[in-house]
Image (tube, rainbow, N blue to C red):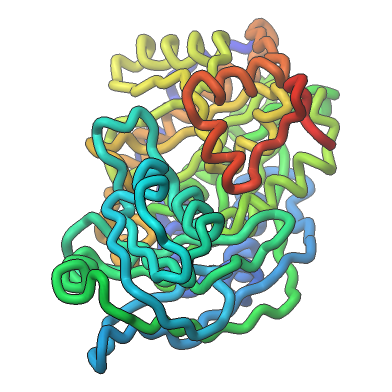
Length: 448
């Protein structure tokens, strides 16, 4: 058993450290960190070097090939009036015209009740309160595809003249089926008022080269067979700095590495830090890693994605009782609010492991409402984050990782069929099947 839970000197060191914030500034100053593009590589190199400087060993970048996507111009014409749009990554290139249909929230019932064949479908980025689960952008996109729509318009529900982004496409078909663009809440409102039922034209220009991404990683602690993975993702959408999503998470795990490196001799279990590439285009980097490693050797995963913008950490534990217990110990020890949810979160880099029954936390910042707010827009910028929150959360995460890595902490796995059943019970399986992300066969086993 380690005695990290009894030590307190490191807390002051973390709270006065600039390591994480300095890296966060460096990452946002890169500019475009889109998957497979030069800025993503620069970000991966920054993280690799920061992990090495923290004292981690074997700092490296493991490369892999991906389907690239490079933005060109996009346009939406209602009559002769052009509206401001941005193409959704991995939208195919093309120009289509059709009747605009405003489907409101774009929940399944909306598609069941409306004929969208050959039409341009517009849906909100929000989900109504009377629907028990959040309906993801990609699910709405594939409802449009499956119902024969000609194009997809994703309307931000947050006011402020900012069109949202977010990728489409699947693992098997990385480039989507129909052109897709994002528009602001204001543009969407104007289109719904003036052009619903009228013909509009959507144009997307893009390039789709084959390219290379990678995962930056390094490790600390004893060379045990078992390991704890602490992860984030480096890539961001090309329209923004990606400060919250996910410069903040990446800065946080490097701050944790810096703290644990100073107490490395106290660790009972190897801790491996991974900053993935290509998360925003379908969890590609983490899926590559999940296929590469011995998953049975992973004790637990602590994945950090989109934190720091608020003080309260949100810990999703995916029904792993031992992870929920660790979250409760963390909140009790520090008398600091921690929001814990046992539901399934199939949208970040823990997920390619959790589907196999590997225990995994999804760590984020608690939000008041549904949706991303200004995330996935050009407003995801540094000045919205506070160094105090980064330092506080790095303290909490360091303690959480140390607890999970403790030799006396047992973390039981779950059978994949239990994860599949939980997704069914939470009504999340439906959307995953529509998208093509359902990983299980009829017996609840992961289809290899």
